[in-house]
Length: 136
Image (tube, rainbow, N blue to C red):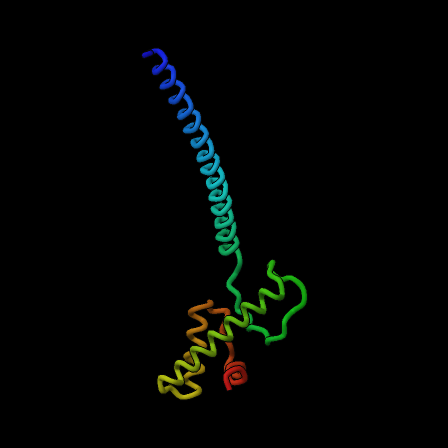
């Protein structure tokens, strides 16, 4: 009778070892997959930092609101429109906030433009003429 119990116990332990080994293999695969993703992202970051270091700072004036056709910098027209709409909405919200705080229209435009530059980067600002056309 003790032999039978020992065999059952051995069989149960072998089964649990198989299950644990299978789970361990699955986790090891996931770890390898995540390491690959991490290495790819690190490489992408290194490439972008390298490109950032090589390119001279741009001093060109931002063009008017006319959208160019086709893909530019890997972004579609729709995503550029979405981005522009988000920036416009943010600019409008900040303008109304500064107006509500008691600033004049001109000062509110300027402050909203500064907020936009801080939130979206210095390349996203507008000229005074564009601000007066957008925020009238």
